Image (cartoon, helix red, strand yellow):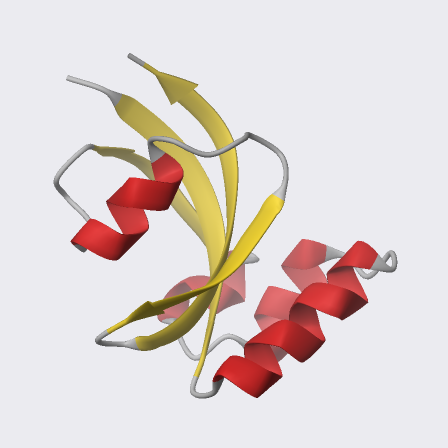
Length: 93
């Protein structure tokens, strides 16, 4: 069963998500941005979601986490919760 660790930032709008992504790409710290803006309780721990298996998260999330490049900020990714920025920190098959 594939497993991964990731962190994310959840916001209401695609525009806000894009704005935060630009801040991070320009050197802002992902954890600090998550603490300040994420609407998910994980924001308090810098957006860290810990380790999870494929199928534990919503499909849109899994698709990115289990197929995209590690240590890069992905998104905006739209789910029923809002818009996410995702960073995959590790993955094992």
